[in-house]
Length: 145
Image 1 (cartoon, rainbow, N blue to C red):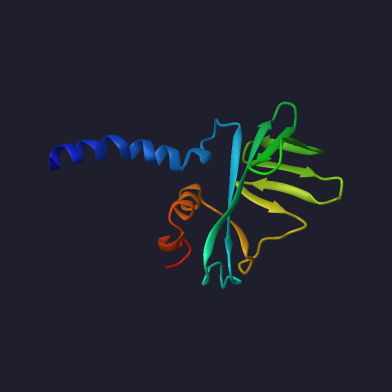
Image 2: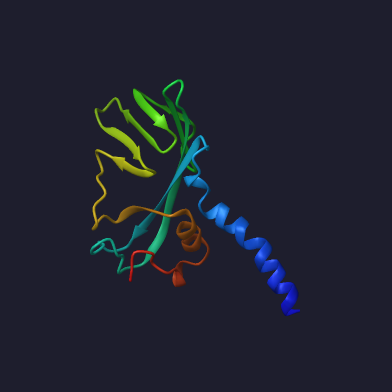
């Protein structure tokens, strides 16, 4: 029995690793931003309150055409305007309001809602977002030491 569990573990581990970090692969044309919510203000990027899943937004990028398309679970497809695109993890779009949406090395920024170490809404890794979604009461905080 232990032999078969070892074989299953060895077979499944690479696929889980690939899935967990698939957003970081250089040849993908999509990037997904996973966000969490902390019930209290964070201190030094650590949530001391109840942490829950907020949402995720996927961005499909067309670098040759300088186009970014976004969607999430709530809104329909929308094209971001006035984009400068290097690749799926590095782009900037200016909105009609004058604000900028930016993805720099996979980290999302909205010029109207800056993320700080005390922000209640913040980006988290995909694996942690799913951990929160599946089991919010026992989720380990990747920022805590």
